[in-house]
Length: 246
Image 1 (spheres, rainbow, N blue to C red):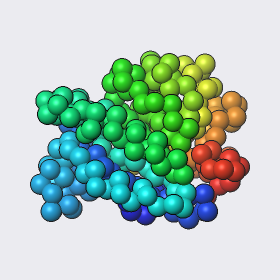
Image 2 (cartoon, helix red, strand yellow):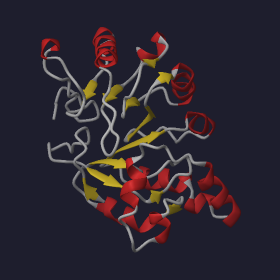
Image 3 (cartoon, helix red, strand yellow):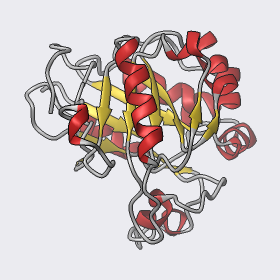
């Protein structure tokens, strides 16, 4: 478990939150993926360097920390990657080494708030996590009409649902009824080589819609902004005091 500079991960005491990655890897290989680049630094683990789906359950030991923390779990992983299912079923250790084990570990650490994002909504909808009060789940998107993806997830995960438009690189479409039910909207830009900035008009459309439906919103520092829109929203609805901002 490591302190993170991710702006929207903040502990209840206002300090920087944590990332924790008991599962690592993804087979999708998005061209803009920062996790695959970062994984190459873990030279002591060949599977990490290759970004091959695998587990490091020893990292959950840090969750024993008694002081409440906000943990962005699986920031270096796609938990619903089919490779995890195949690996666990093949070894016959699904309930010990698969997602069920992850959820049980989160349930036994209720003092912490866990945030998990996915880019594979169809797999999430087919195998959603249990409704843990300390778990926030969301869909990570970049552009396009994601209405069906949002609707599919919200059918099985209607509460504490996050739409994370990061990195936002183009126009984004969501059905209004589902958009209005979001628990949290995150908007951020791309980092690293070949970074594409979010279109200013798309940012404005999302922020205005969020304001209209009173959706808590967090706009990252790397996202373009017009001063005439007022201060950037920095809502952190998972904190004990929802009005608190970073």
